[in-house]
Amino acid sequence: MSTNVRVRFAPSPTGFLHIGSLRTALFDYLIARTLGGKLILRIEDTDKKRQMEGAVEGLINILAWAGIKFDEGPGYLRAVDNDTQADINKDVGEFGPYIQSQRLGIYKEHSQALLKKGGAYRCFCSPARLEEMRAEQQAQKMPPRYDRACRDLSERQIAKKIADGEIFVLRQKMPLSGEIIAHDELRGDIKFAARDLEDQVLIKSDGMPTYQFASVVDDHLMEISHVLRGEEWISSFPKNILLYQGFGWRPPKFIHLTLTLNKAGGKLSKRQGDVAVEDFRAMGYLPEALLNFCVLQGWHPSASAKAPADKKDEILSLDQMIEYFDYQDMGTSSAIFEIEKLDYFNGYYIRQKSVEALTKLCLPFLGENLKLTKDSRKQSEDYIKKVIALEQERLKKLSAIGELTEFMFTDDLRYEPKLLVWKKLTLEQVKENLQTVFELLEKISATDWTRSSIETALIGYIEAKQMKAGDYLWPLRAALTGRQSSSGPFEVAEVLGKEESLKRINVAIKKI
Ligand code: GLU
Image (cartoon, rainbow, N blue to C red):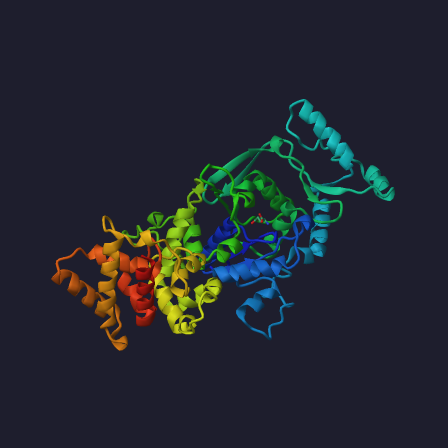
């Protein structure tokens, strides 16, 4: 396997990680791992407007939480390895700095080299002139595009403008005719007519590079072999290829990922709700579920020759993804974001957790419930663990655990007496049945208070008397939980304990 495979994830630190970016990072990771290469984190922060304090650290933290491990990148990567002695100012890797705002000298040097080679030119057009030009183009129903007014300025004209202190940008000099063929690993050759390409800005008037310039320079200098990015970049793809040619560099392999769309077929944006991985974490989604969800947005194990033929359930651990994934099997049709599917995966991974691990994960979501009781037993770790185990099967999101288990903590269960009524029973019959249940359960000793002894006592009675199970078990379950739906009465009674269970049955009897 080639060791020259180097894949980069190059996010802009906007203050949160979009779920679509997590998908890109995951595919970057899978390409690097499956091809025996390295994964590099590069921060694209040259757009000052979009920057936020602490955003880089936040980005690295959430990626680490999600389980994406980088081989190279900013020194802060050391901090997430729990190494408290780590020097977070020292890059991880030899190709740094990995933060673009720390590479401005590199861009300057390369832009001057490109200027000398004739691949770029200075444009002195003022924003006002460009605005006027655009308005005119719009009026004539022409595509808005720079009219190349500065493309053929003479050396003397340029020198004079610079001497006069006129500010300028650097623009890429596109060929005027012909065809550019850009090769995408999934889509094959894509042809573009040179006449459709704008002389795009490479360096802004403040000296900052645009994405188009910085990413090409960095991908080359960081010896990136595979560039995976969203399909919104296909329109600038030929310009990137021309830039590589202008420098005399060999371009990396490009893979353009399809967009993830919402169900209505539109773009997934922050405005429509939760798209930030940070939000999903806060709602109690597990990283395993998010990664499993993301990998299916653009790839499927059924396309893999390496996945077992019966791999239809779509449940994939990160190790299985690495085993089965091949970027050449990735699809090119858009993926749809189905939250129900994410919930399904989350429920699955919650069920896979040990009770200990799940309890730890649930604790931050249980705080309010613990305040509902004065009983120290109900606040003990052992009790909490049993309560979590009771709900593990039904739990879809960690954040739901509070609501789901409230009844297990409260000292004051509130519900209407009619909740206790099963089918056609009268309240009087319910009361009698609860009294019978109370007497039967009272006979079980506290040390023998288990799910099965409770079940044996009650079912034994019901069968001997040839009664209907629901006539006793519904009122009991409702009395113990105060809820329309919950786990079964035997499990709940076991966890509540004898004293609390009898107390709740008594309260129910008195309610009638
Ligand atoms: N900074 C770009 C973005 O966040 C990266 C695109 C790329 O991977 O080249 O969209």
